Each structure stands twice: as C-alpha cells, then as structure tokens.
Length: 344
Image (cartoon, rainbow, N blue to C red; front, top):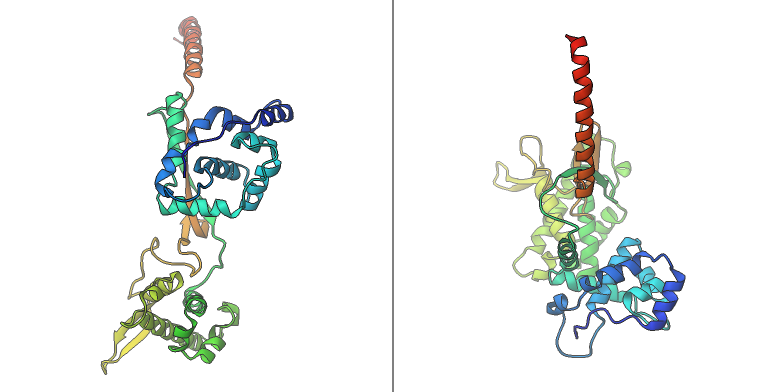
C-alpha cells in the first residue's frame, strides 16, 4: 500500500456532479466535509510494503460507509462506483472509470477484522466531530433496548440436540469426509440425520421421544469423543459446528456411571441444572442467538440491541429557553402578587 488518501477530484467530474446535484447529496457532502477522515495511513499496518500497490483503503472505507448508509450489497456498491456521479465525485474518480470488482469489499472487511481495525473510521470521525465542536463530553443520554429476532428456527431441547448432530455431520462431510466415514456408520447416520430434525416428524409417544433423545445424545458423544481423540487432527475440533455440538452436548446431557461402573448418558433434568441463559445455545446455526424475555408478554429467540441517544439541547436553544423562562417567571410573579389578596 502507498498512503495517498482520497485522490483529487477530476475537474470534469466536479462540473458534472455539481450540475447533476445542484443541492448536493450525501456522497458529495461527505467528500466536501469529511475527506480528511478517510485517510490511508491508519490502515498501513494491515497491508504489506512489497508488491504491486492495491486499492486505497481510504477509498474502500468511504465506499463501505456509503454502502451502509444506502443499504447496498457488495455488488450494488461496486456498481454505484461506476454509474453514480455523486459517488464518483466522493471517490475522486474519472467519469470513465470502471470501478473495481465487488469481491474487493469483502476482502477489505476481512482484512480490517483480522487486524482489529473495525473502529478506525469511527474513531477518526468522532475525533473530527469533537474538534469541530459537534460533540463534547458530559450532557445527558438515554438508553433503551429492543428485541431483534434471529433468522433461525425455534427449536426445543430435543430438536436442538438432533439438529446439532446433523449440523456437525454436514460440516464434517464437507471438511473431512474420509475421517468421518471411518468413525460412523454412514448408512445409519444418513437415514437418521438426512432430513432436518423437526418436531412434527418425531414420535408422539413420550417413551419413544425419550429414547430418541438418548440416541441423539449417544451420537453426539461418539462424535465428540472421536473429534477429541488423541490421534485426531486438531483442525477437526476447530470446525465451528463441532465446537457447537460439544456445547449442546454439555448443556443438554449428563454422563454418569451406573451401578456397574459403566458410563451412561442421559438428558439433564431440573436437578442436574442447566447453563445460564447468556451461555445456553439456542441454535446450531447461530452461536449468538439466545432465548430472552422483556416484560411479561414479550419472548423471543435472537438478540437484544441497546440504543443510546443524546438528549441535550444546543446552547442557543438553552439561552432562548432561559430568556423565555425568565420573562414567564416575571409575568407569573406579577400575576401572583395581584391575585394573592384574593386568595387570602
């Protein structure tokens, strides 16, 4: 990477953009007022010093911000750099510039995440606003939370146990098919876990459901023991679905020795305890989703997002409010004085 920052805006691009957007646009205002925020130097640690120069990280970070503001996919954002005049203005591009491939944006985000640089642009923007007097310390804030429903199925404990085994099998079938085939009966497991585990297709008898839960637990334990065996490659147990299966196994089942000293697995009951809600998995496909409640009527599986907003007033508004309050207080005092004898 060669730190250069946002390129100068070509003269023809300026003329066309000003003519097309006489009142400006979001992209144009960002370029005119916040261009120093999108610099290359803060990203230098994430890029090499040898080889052909890549795209400017300052430009890509600006594209990412505009993409978020307009709720665009990577392909749509890459297309905007080609056909949107105000985006060309913001990025300092020639009108004939054909932009870049959409895959560049995902690779750029991955690079930032790998080097812990997700907050670089936000911190620079906050510093810019502080220096401009737009934000300051102190003041009043209010915070509230709202629920966000996850895009996964609601599963009961039995469904979660079976679906977690199924998810691990599918991941291992792709990543390590030969290893998996040497440790399970492929035909039997394919028949049991071929279709997704669904409560509608489970037996209605409580005894049969308990037996099915036992089978799910035995299969999960066998997979986990194979994955954590001494001769198993370490990367097998690092597969996300395998790690989640282990968590589900611990939170759903308990392994104990019977009277004969044999290890048996059974489903946890109320006396065995369960992990706290913030650790308890709710889906093998979303490790962050949790069951939650708010109040007495709202229950959901997903997340809880906290929103904070400032609720202070501008100095000019406070001055006007103070002047109005003083005048009102004087008028109120005079009225009160005139009415006091009547009250007495």
